[in-house]
Length: 210
Ligand code: PRT
Ligand code: ZN
Image (cartoon, rainbow, N blue to C red; front, side, top):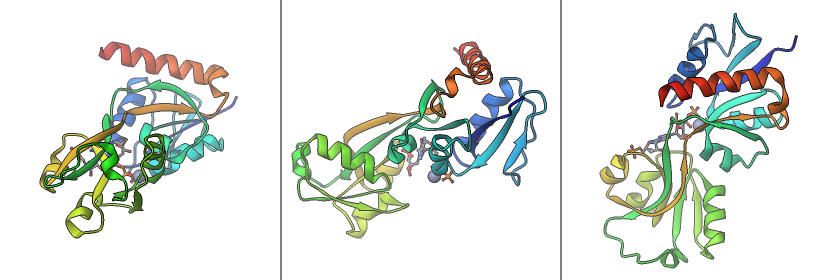
């Protein structure tokens, strides 16, 4: 019989909730921080622990059948996968934020300005849809300090409580997307019996939580 593979985040904001969800589905597996693959003893499934950024492509390419990852990462990587289930955790939004002292009135005031982000593709699409021509500066981390350093006029980043913006003298300016963790599958995987069985278990765990 076939063994499915599901990719989840190895460590970070989605790891704990992803592990908890799978355990609540009645799946037995060891959750050693050091291992990259953990077999499930009571279901034909292996769990792959990966960087979240790699999960969409692993699923698209069929190295994993399923994955749990934030919608923001799926959108940014632009992969072609099936959305199987929203999971209700890892909620956040992606916003353009500007210094408290900035005097932008409307989106068009971003024309000609520079915006630092780790999500250049999502930002480029949003700016394009709104006919804004801004200079996107892609950086891999600590995006929120770039206006203070004079690297950019604005930022585009994940916001949850807003505390990070506040402590860096920034304020939200435009909402671009909201995100949560979702279960994705390789295209066509939703027609497989084992995948259907797993989705059903996940849905009953989610229903029990309501
Ligand atoms: O190591 P790996 O590459 O796997 O992890 P990572 O560091 O890329 O991601 P991680 O673990 O930080 O986040 C995983 C996913 O959690 C993200 O892709 C989002 O889908 C989701 N998520 C939910 C968040 C947040 N909330 C969040 N608050 N991801 C990041 N943040 C950061 C944000 O970048 C900013 O620096 O928290 C800060 C803002 O938080 P507030 O509360 O101050 O507004
Ligand atoms: Zn990442």
